[in-house]
Each structure stands twice: as structure tokens, then as C-alpha cells.
Length: 408
Image (cartoon, rainbow, N blue to C red; front, top):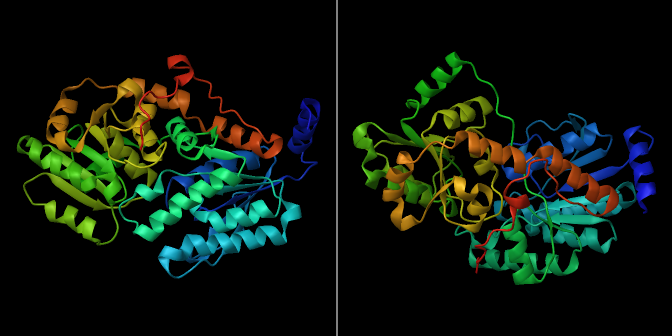
């Protein structure tokens, strides 16, 4: 399609004279309640729908009590998945793939998220439908997966890399890894950063009182309680730092259910050691108040690319102490403080003594992680078959690729 035809086509789309149906597959669905992929789909499809494109989002039936046909202009398609949690993604992808094949003439483009949806991805590919795959992170490195699942994840990634011509990496470091490990070139499109809600001082005070913390007198981690996110190790580092003796606390948000690992975290909590563990919360007002008032945010996600929780912290927190990894370095640059597990106690004390970087962090996340630019890149992939992520901000010579990319 030539440039002039592309412009004409987009103008017809804008005027509503052409129906361009784009499918978003492989996530849990909308409204977003579960993680970064779901939030990404919600943000992207909101903007694409507003620009005149017809977006269809596949959802897993078992996760939603109410199942409307539409969510804020996006059509929702439900698949039943599997009652066996470990097989849910696999089965859902087959059901989604079958739906796509039966209705393949309706779709201009199909976006899949997560290589673990390999069966559905292959079905879409073999049907000859235009397809792009957002690879997700290095899932096989998550300790929670058994060996068979680790093998499946890495095999899926290798197969997708060989067969799919359009691969999306949400970080440059992840793209470098895929090129080195699988010989696959990918399009860099990260996540965007949300616009924090404005919360009244009275409501903010209520939230802080509810969680038992005072402004500037606590560190914060909001995460799933899983080994690769290091909540236990970070909590141990806080306890060893001795900061609780001066009334400082460490607040961990994200507890859902008892597992061997989450039990380790619960066992660390004692009345006088300053460790506060609370359940997962999805109220934007609550998490924004907790981020805005902490002394610093602790980021332990060690597997994956651009992490949405880190971007949210950059938008609000005065300081960030992050796991020393290529992904953290890419997002934070020299604005972050970095830790290794064996030096956490010292790092807790060091980051508290460091200057606040609130304005610089806000500027960086605003300049580089723009949902409008993300949506434009996905739209370009769907309509033109090529995309370039172009946020308005320019930092560090268009954010050169990170130098530390040894992920092996």
C-alpha cells in the first residue's frame, strides 16, 4: 500500500466510511483488572476506538461475573478457557484461534499478547491473517513454573520468533535478547504511563491512616507476591537495615493467597519490626496516595521488559530503589538507585539519604512512556504493517540502547 493510499485509507477510517476490525487476543480481557497486558489493551483500544477503528477484545469467561457485549466502545468476545489454572492460557488460545479462523474475513489485523498463547498464534498464522505478537518477558525464568512449563515457554518463544514476521518487544533490552537468542528482529513499543488521579487531602489522610503509615516515613512495594519480584528478600533487607527503630516502615501491597513463598513473607511480619503486609488493591486513588507519600519505592521485578508498576512509580514517587537489571536501567537510567539482593540493608539506608528525584522521574516517564504514541504505533502496525514508536520527548539522544544487556 503506497503512502498516498495509506493517507486516503486513514482519512476514510477517520470519517467512519471504512470498518477496520482489529482483534486483541491472549489477555484476560476488559475491563483491566489483572496486570500490565490488560491495562495496555485497555489504553490502546480506547485510543484506537476513538480514532475510528473497530476493536474486538477477547476475554476469559471465568474471570468476569458480568459479561457485557461491549466495554466503552470495544466489542468483547468471551472464551471459556479451562478450569485447570495451569491450562487456562493454552486452552483459551485455541478457542480464540478457532473463533478467528471462522471469522477471518472480518479482521484487518490480529494482535496477540504473550508467547504462551502459541496454539492460537499458530492457528492465526496458518490461516494467513495479518498478525503481530507482543512477546511478553522471559517467562521461563520465573521460579513458580515447573520444568515442563519452562520448556514450553522457551519453545513457544523460539517458534514465534521463527514463524512470526511481526514481533513486538516492550523494551529495547528485551528486543536485544530476542535478536541474540532467537535471531528475531522486533518492533520496540513499550507501555505508557498512566495519568495519576487527583485525590483530596482529606481522602489522602484517610488512606494513609487506614494503612498505618505517615508521609515520608515508609518505603513501598506494590507487586504480586512471587519469587521473581523479590518481596521476601526486600522485606528481609528492610528488617536488617534497622530503620524500624526510628519509626520507619516498609509497606508491601499485593497479598492474595497463601503459597509457600507468600507464607515466608507473612512469617517475617512482627509487631515491632515495621513490616506491613496488605492485600492487593486496584483502587487508583489508594495506590496513587501510597506512591505519592512514600519515601521511596522498591522495585524487585527481575523478569520481563518494561514494567507498568515501575512506570507508575516513576510518575509519583520521589525516589526508586530498583533491582539491578537491564530492564530497570533502561526505564530509570541514572535517576534510579540500584540494589542486589546481598546488599539490600545497606541500599535501604543509602536511598533514604539520596536527594529526591520526583520532577526528573516524572519528566522521564512522561517523555518516554506515552500511551498516545503507543497507540499510534499499534495503529500503524494494523493499518500499514510497520510501526515506529515516536514519543514527543527526547532524552539521552533518543534514549540509546542500554549498555548492559547480558541476560544469559
